[in-house]
Amino acid sequence: MSTLTTAAYLVSSVLFILSLRGLSHPSTARRGNFLGILGMTIAIVTTLSNPGVLSYKEIGIAFLIGGLIGTSIAVKIQMTALPQLVAAFHSLVGLAAVFVAASAYYNPSAFNIGTVGSIPMGSLIEMSIGTAIGAVTFTGSIIAFGKLQGFVSGNPLVFKGQHFINLLLGLGIIALIVKFCIDQNQELFWLIVFASFVIGVLLIVPIGGADMPVIVSMLNSYSGWAAAGIGFTLSNNLLIITGALVGSSGAILSYIMCKGMNRSFLNVLLGGFGGEQAASAGGVKDDRQAKQGNAADAAFMMKNSKTIIIVPGYGMAVAQAQHALREMGDLLKAAGAEVRYAIHPVAGRMPGHMNVLLAEANVPYDEVLELDEINRDFSETDVAFVIGANDVTNPAAKTDKTSAIYGMPILDVENAGQVFFVKRGMASGYAGVQNELFFRDNTLMLFGDAKKVCEDIIKGLEN
Amino acid sequence: MSEISNQLENLSYKAQQIANEASQLASSVAETSGGHSDFIIFGITVLVLACFVGYYVVWSVTPALHSPLMGVTNAISSVIIVGALLAAGPVDSNISKYFGLVAVTLAAVNIFGGFVVTNRMLSMFKKKQ
Image (cartoon, rainbow over all chains, first blue to last red):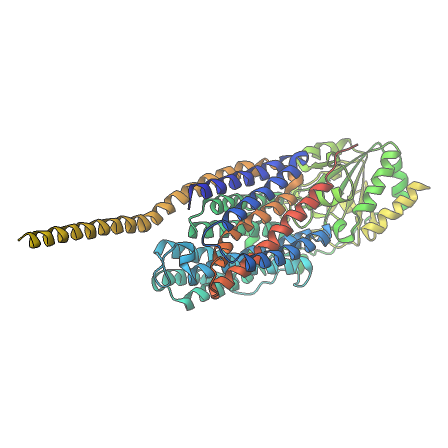
């Protein structure tokens, strides 16, 4: 690599770092994204100027096709579908890593790593590890995509001996990699790819839909490590640095999500949490009656409140209720109330999902607060309006040691003067735990579709 | 006699040339083989340091922007297009080149998709008027 090339790659690494740095505040975030684009452009142009890269026409066509597909998807996608979009994109990074590794295996001279059949040991190790991670990312992300999109059941799929099979497969892949590094046999290469595809599927199927924020973040991390692995094969620092950035970003996001549920990463990975099984396990029959209200009552009470905190959850996203919700908030503000939004770290199906949906509905970002910022304020709040969230408000997380969600940080909506719960029915949340709050004196249930309820409240407020 | 001495001189000159070439070859072999194992250590150094940079930079990202963070990281992880371009680069067509072209397409979907969707998200975040 010439000095100039190395320097250009360094510039683009720095631009990538600055692009993530820009996301520390919404006011600098767009510039950050622009710096990322600049860094990528420099990386691509620098690589194209490599003397070994000559087939500009074919590359141009491939790039154009990919670019058109990517752009048209990104322009059309609904913001509620972001989690599955991100999962789908991760799968492509994984697959691309597999193809790059395969290409390096069949034509090592293009990468300066020896010739066919006599690739140095170091390169073989890097290549096969990069391939395995890429392949796991590919199929794992596809399953995550399917679960989020609804192609695959969101319920955890568990069967006996599951973890034992995964362990055997994992050890098998390691054995294959060792043998491949000695023999350089092409059948072994494809066996590694195949076994990694299988383990990618098996790792994700036992994990329930609401744990997908952790999984999407984890796969984000994997796609970074796959890129770093390819970086070692190419002796290219840009790929290593970028891979490490993406890898640590995904790892930190999964950590934040796990902490938001008070569960260990291993506990999430082992799966089986949530869905029908947990619901029946926690299903002690409850004869208590929750108080039911209607939209007119809610409108009247909120109109006379001074402080209101809205707690959105995944149900809001499913019902596409964010626009109606914002309109309701505007009317309440016009009536003289202070309206704010409280976001739990695991609300929605990906980190920060609720913030994007509220931003889409034109809610100013300084009215949207995180758990730590707003949790103390509930006790001085007249109304807490919970829409599409459940487990994240359940006080059992603080009091009931036997509860599946014990220890999970919750939003203290119980401390508010009046609590409204917008829900479709009395069904328990993802964790399969009944929410104590439904039976409190200061709670009123508003049954119905989240969007419909908001619209009815808006009508009530306008009268 | 002079003819023989001339031939000898010629021969010794050639021998010297061969020796020179051999030593050059040896050093270049040492460079390529030793060069790679050096890179592993160097690469690991870079990897570890970059993880630290990533750790501090990512913790400074505001939680409100975690979705755009995933969008950007998704886009920049497609920097493996560098490898894809090298693979697709040679003029003569073979399986390796086709793999490279497929990888270029996949990475391009991600690059454009990732940056465009992030830009869409970020353009929606507005401050209170």
